[in-house]
Image (cartoon, rainbow, N blue to C red; front, side):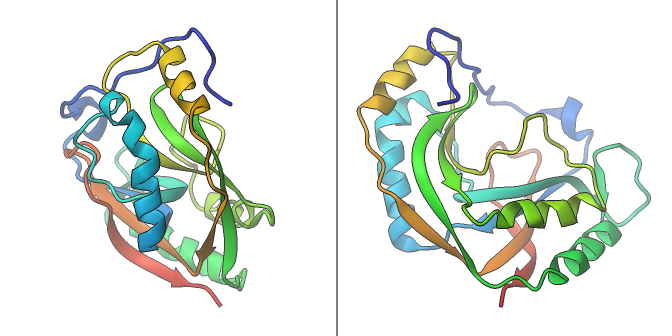
Length: 207
């Protein structure tokens, strides 16, 4: 459990963040799509008991983030968190060199960061680490935390006391579910839309 008792959660402000995006739009990342209808229904079910604690404007599809790249650009980098299409193309080549077959991940337990509720993902064969090592050869990751594979269920709308969330987590058991990964996706979301849709841009089919 990452969330500590008797601590304050971090609320997500429902606003634009111009100091972050600086007028740029397409924020890119590598991720694994969650596209199994029965799994999506189950994730909705798990999220429901916490829904009054979470921001209501969550349109983003369920996914597992692999590597956060930055603002997609075809031009010369202007800011540290710009990510060039040339870098993306090279990342694709490096991952294809791994010749990966479809693999499985496992949902194990519900947990929380200080800002978000999520489900842990177990990668027993350490495939995600191999993929991330390839990505990292071309780009430093835009991330503040140590990588923790997960599916985000929602962001908190108020700075609740963590004990509220921990109590609800203890009341719910999570089914162990396998996720078969057959492709990797690079996509982006619109930086001016809080928790807006992910738009696929490039995909790598496995096997």
